[in-house]
Length: 137
Image (cartoon, rainbow, N blue to C red; front, side):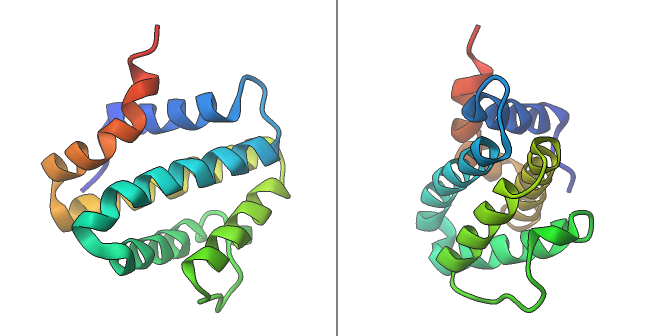
């Protein structure tokens, strides 16, 4: 099930706001990991830490079809290792590529989650992660 346009825009705006006005790739990487931790914290009580980790792994795999540099083939380490690799790879590329890959990863994750738990529950769980930025003047 595709993510709504408003949620996609909220995800993009959240990343842009958290990365700062004219971010470098390191700022984008940090914003992505910080946002990811908020998402994981909201979802773990509902689908479990392992469920969150599996969805992250699947999202990374799917997103790497467009951004092959995002993951190491065969990298099946712990969640912490995957996030460290993700942060390093995002920080090591051009800011525009880092921002697009981060956005694609979070949208893919949200779409996968929606197929599992439905749009209403996905919205209730994740919209607060994006909401503070979307209500700003």
